Image 1 (tube, rainbow, N blue to C red):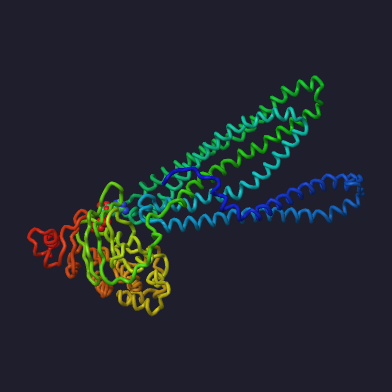
Image 2 (cartoon, rainbow, N blue to C red):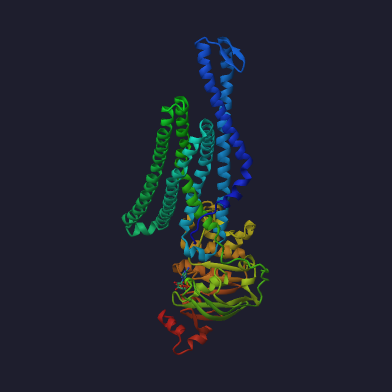
Length: 587
Ligand SMILES: Nc1ncnc2c1ncn2[C@@H]1O[C@H](COP(=O)(O)OP(=O)(O)OP(=O)(O)O)[C@@H](O)[C@H]1O
Ligand SMILES: [Mg+2]
């Protein structure tokens, strides 16, 4: 992914809808501050009035001690109720805005990740993408909620103090202004450093996710190979790296506030030097001078505070770069503008002069020309890595050919809608993907409207009904994460039932039986035979016994068709690869 700075204007779309609520939050904040002031007034005048028995004068009114007592008793609950309301309103509204923006971004990210094509995940690991949805959005959310109130408070204080300073002595105020650009320099430098380090931190956090994901996925292998310590060290390494980056951020961050303070003091000293002479010479009164100096110090306070929230802002900006980077990705495979739905399959699948490679400089499929007629079973055999699965991937448009076309009934699949293409192709592979839900859900996956009757019928045809019925909750039994609670053959039959229910005219079977023992292979094989009935099938298999009856056997060799024909034809070739492979497998 390209690394580019995020344009602040991109946030506009997310922020604008919440402007009214933001204003309301600020009003709540104002109410809170006002009530604070009022309660201070009460503390001072209440003490004077009630306990010191003094009369309190306020806007021409005079309050006796008893008046003050009554007033205090009546007002204190009201003040605190209003203060509480302001505090609640501010927190709730700001969090409401933050959560809403993050919710929008989260679903946008999810939709983007689901829309991207296979090639994106060849380049980017899924665990790292997970860290963008969780960790990077978390950093953004943190800043969205915490930064606005402090920026606003400090901004207001700053403006107020500038006014005061100018009011007190505008000439000297101008002098102090020279200090601000100087104060901005370290802030800018720190911001850059923090942003860079935050980004490194987020990248490293993604490594931690990746490490964790691998451990959880490879749990059995780790146990079986006694590699706990190896994995521990790997994780420790990643964890330590993150720790060091985090400390680096802290070091820069913790430095910025004292430096701002120092700058403020330096400005104070400069004023002391210049103004002190005026005081000595009697041009400026001592009181006015001290007030001015105090105001200048207070003016630096908001800048100092800004330096404090700055690291949150920078971390959020670094994260938003990573979030927008994903949002800017475009799927390489998508519906062309003029894409029409693929008509129901009835004639042939044709690969015409197809070249393809996963990586730019390496061809995996070279000049493939092939016709599979309606109703035929085309079996692909050949060495591992010769490109069999790749041919199926191209038919499903998981990837587009670099050159050449694939035609179904004469329609180039690049110009039909992806939905219509994929709805006509079913796929059963060796490693079955089951979702962490019930058996029923997994069979009906992709055909969600299916009736129970149809689901059971599909399961029966897939030789799965018997074992499902014996499960503790039958069709409602959860299969566990990735179908962990089922055997390989059982999972396989569920995936066959799923394909059966989808009932597509074209079927891709990729090594569907190779991982099974002979008992369950028999069950799966007969389920597959049921599934293949009345369909056009692309059958990929290492075990040649399973392809014998195919109408056409295609022998692949390094991305090219080495031989093609029926079993009998290919066996008849003296030095044929197919014949040799058969001899090797002892058939
Ligand atoms: N996602 C990928 N990115 C890069 N290269 C890939 C990718 N998938 C497969 N390849 C490469 O493409 C070649 C063909 O792979 P393919 O999966 O089509 O082989 P296959 O004939 O199905 O092998 P097998 O019989 O082992 O399943 C292999 O050399 C493989 O390394
Ligand atoms: Mg394969």
